[in-house]
Image (cartoon, rainbow, N blue to C red; front, side, top):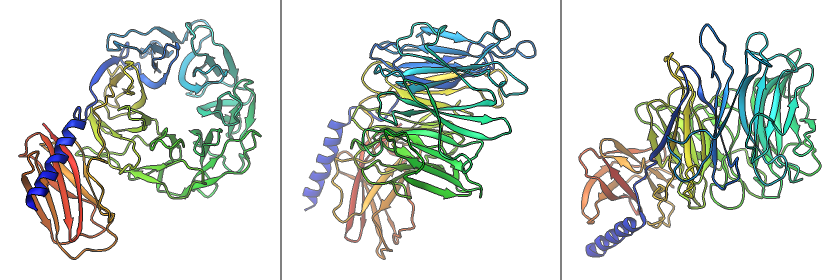
Length: 536
């Protein structure tokens, strides 16, 4: 019996070796910085195939370009980097646009946005906003331009469409909605402020660029609310969106609206949450299709814990409770993903397996949760970067043209560094990324389940072993065993009892060599195994 067990473990380990082409790693392939100190290079990042060559391009804004205290104010600048084979730190911008303040029309380039395919030609378009500065930090009325450049534009000096705010309106935020009315044109959400301080949401319809006020703003008049495109979460051919706001009672709310051809949005499908204190942000984030079932998935809100609440799209109405919680990744300098405006959370298929993956920024690092048919909620890998501590931004796209989405992160400013020009780093996706949700080892039929995090784990750190599927206290000892590639028992420990309230056990792996191992947990008749990797 022992020989059979040993053979089984060995076969599992060997099969893992065959399937594991590389250890979890996102290598750095490019690094860029701003042109001068305090230029805030990387203030925003946008990914789209702007020149229609089949490769994702990277558009970067430098919000304070031109600034030199006390002599010249900022005028802002936008850089377009074309993706393709050979993309690296040596890749030069294919084109750029800078503000002309204090000369000419005295305009400042402010923000950039991927607004989707607003002219219906099958390619995503770019929006750049600029404005004439008014008193303080607010632009003057009638001074804001929303300049839309159709895909394949080779010159940023002349936009294809220019939208202006009307008298009495002040500038707010822009949101990509997708095609919510199913007419073949993607639509845009605009948050803005009226004279007197009233805040409104409008939908700008793609194709015609007509504006329609969104539902009754008397109910949700909030200076920090949002309208965010979620993708087609019901898979009915119409893109859906959310509206987040504080109500009159001070409660944080998120309403989900289904797209429809009638352009009527008086009734919402669901309120995802209604909490006064427990939500850090009310902005949702589209997450692609994490389980590859044809329904778009999304982040609904962020609690104070930093966990990412995920709703998986389906043909039924969304529920109040999320489908999945992605646990905040940690360590010595743990912090939740960027929570102020959700700019630190995005998605892309980094390992090319057909499942979208979640990328979220944290303090000094970012984490990746690999998508799959049965995500376990624990971070699959983290990437450290000492500059990721203040105001970072993240996008994903295939910038080097190898068929795997890459991760671009930026740090436009460091709070305590007056000479910081702003940096951007690009990390390469690859097929060697493996999930903690390892299908090589069969799941226990009784529902008891073991997960190991992080995986891979450094031999200079500790690994957390977590249990699920335990509904009540088990009065017998919990046995944790670790086997090496040869099937030899290299570690074993026992816990007096296991309770549902136990979050995890920590295994000290300091003295263990790099390689592939099997962790096995036994609680009475319950048993579960998980493969993990130790790296130096």
